[in-house]
Image 1 (cartoon, rainbow over the protein chains, first blue to last red):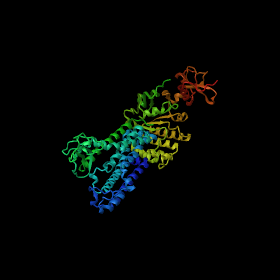
Image 2: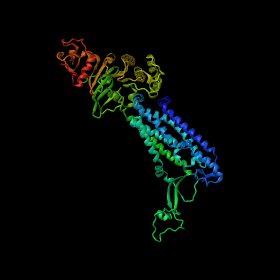
Image 3: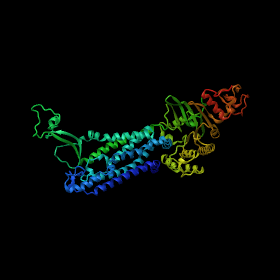
Image 4: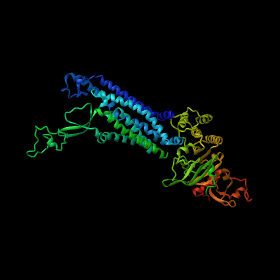
Length: 332
Length: 303
């Protein structure tokens, strides 16, 4: 088995090297950016809501307390530097690059270059042949993506000095263990497409589109169908421990009943509102207010576990499809 | 024009019954019945598109037959793929090697995929041919690449070897070496080989049985010696007595259309006292006759 794993890396040495350099480079870059942000040392008294330093942009510094002016300015400059901005967005790209880069050649290139029959003739059971290659890819990408994901967690902590990244839902699907989960899902999906199409370039293109679609729809779908059971109503003015995942906002009466009126009766002076005589809103009334259904930060690991389970199940299904399909398809 | 009675299935290493394979409208194999005797080296000869590769790919479970069945060493490869492929060594049409992997890496890969792979045996064969084990496989010459493919197939120590036109892209010297290595290995191991080729002269010395495939059908299936002995090539106007015309084609020199005749068994044996028993026909002429018959014309007609 060791031979087969090593030979898989050797066959895909370019992709293996690119993936290793990308993951370790991104991790190093994120840690360097974190060190840069942490070196500003913004005092706790200068954190807005206990989370982030004042944003000291060119036009809005007048309202920042005097003692916070300088650290806020330095933090804002560091946060808006190009390297921090680029490395912050890697979480939405790197796992997909890694999964597609390792997954596309696994089956598709073997079929394309005519080497699959040689291996299939020797292996007998094709699923064992593919399982060995998938295992090799997983052994490479899981630790590398975990390193990059943990570095992204450190970076998030540096970007919001007052929060615990492991109790905050800020960009939580673009860092930490989600690096690994997205990477594994992209790998399995790409391998399945490779078994289906048997051509590298179409596999890469379709995998990219599929990854974009999955990334764009994941959060709306999990919010709507998975997390609703964990969301609690947070009344206006109430505070909750940790960071919140806003599941849904609603307009409520303060007794918790959902408001069913219109904006015209909720807010005074909404442009275009026509009030019937005697129906004008009472300016002294507290009235209904905006409230949120939220998932609190103490559910962080529960949410991560739930979403991880769903992603891993999806990845396993894609992998199983690839293993079955590769046994059915004919070589070129 | 049916197949001659082949070997009994009890001693056959490869058996096909009513094997058919279509690719959309194209019929690649049409109710093929075949029996390759154990221990034989059988030449599978036919023009391009005759169905040779398809037949071998069905035996390798790369293609699923539309009808009929095939057994390799008694095992149906489609139903019991792992078990069947353990008994088969396969050499593909073009030497498919992994770019960037050395010859030794290929042997290591074969060992990791096939539990019974004898890497030392394969290594010894490559050593004898002077093929460096540390050389990248994609930099080997065509002949060396084919020898690597053959060494991997032989390293499986399989009972049955299926070779899909391995000689097609080799120069004459490389072809000779390949055949010699194959012969040595098959004779010393007592295995069975089905060698597909359209280069008749190369298989003539190596094989003891001939199967001619044309248009997806078996045109001839008999021992090589019998094929030579039971056919005569003459011009169309002078048929041997009691012979049946097989096919006509342009003779050597391009001057004359020649016809291949199939003799009655008694005539071939010389028992009728009319034909000269020792006379034989070249294997190339036998094959050309059947290929012309499969094509349905005598090719270029001369006035």
